[in-house]
Image (cartoon, rainbow, N blue to C red):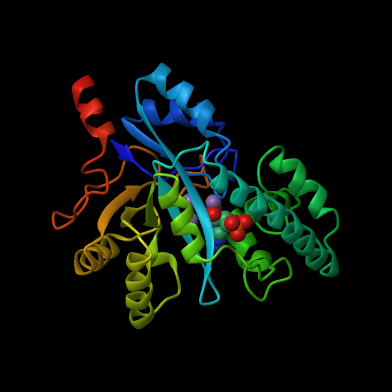
Amino acid sequence: MIDLHSHSNISDGLLSPAELVAHAASHGVRMLALTDHDDIDGLAEARLAAKVHGIQLVNGVEISVTWKKRTLHIVGLNIAPENEALKNALSTVKHGRLERAKLMALGLEKAGIHGSFEAAAANAAQSILTRMHFARFLVERRYAKDTKSVFKKYLVKGKPGFVDHQWMSLEAAVSLIVNSGGEAVLAHPGRYDIRRTNMLLLLEEFRALGGAAIEVVTGSHTPPQFIEYAKYAQLFGLRASQGSDYHGKGISFMEMGRLPALPSNCVPVWQNWPQMSEMLVKA
Ligand code: AMP
Ligand code: MN
Ligand code: MN
Ligand code: MN
């Protein structure tokens, strides 16, 4: 009933912010964070819809970060959407994504695939440009059978459509989130290609920078990883978050409203949130 990671078509999800909130409500979610990639433009619409459906909306964002040459995702929860520094930084990222998309299209062009920039941009409409928008075009053109195989063939490191993009630093992302009144959460740690030594370094650094929590239960983790990352959270005194990472039917890692409970040794990230008492009052 608490889902703190989801995407609308403001980034690479399929549903509009209002549709996403309605979907969440109809699947039993009582508290939802909208966490679009590098964009907070969907929050106002989601907030209105949340009022209509009687669910708690948490203002969120999922910021792309480069750490030791790897791309990581940092979720910000309870950020202030009107915060100028945050808005400015995200608009810089949006511009960077546009430049990256042009380079991706160039790479695909060299592999004999034409018109991908225009198609991805059309798929993205008003939203930011992500690899997912290229993936949809490539699947439509039958370059691969589904999103998963299209990523493998064209959009990951070493493939024609991949561009080694420089995202924000971990420090910048955490401080933007914290300075806008939010809490920083390391998204799906089990998805990164990081061995234990580096994971320990990352968590140490993340906590020292002011990070609050790590995702323990997520659509990207297996049940053994729930246990593994609950231990990491405990080890570092970090709280634990949970979220489906829902993107829409067919491309989501998990349907909404089906998250298992956090392991019992976790301190939930929402423990002291004012939204919790509001939700319980309504229940
Ligand atoms: P971007 O932030 O533009 O690099 O796009 C990354 C997005 O593409 C992620 O948020 C996922 O939603 C999606 N994605 C990344 N890797 C894969 C994959 N192997 N299969 C399916 N979707 C993926
Ligand atoms: Mn995504
Ligand atoms: Mn992510
Ligand atoms: Mn996500």
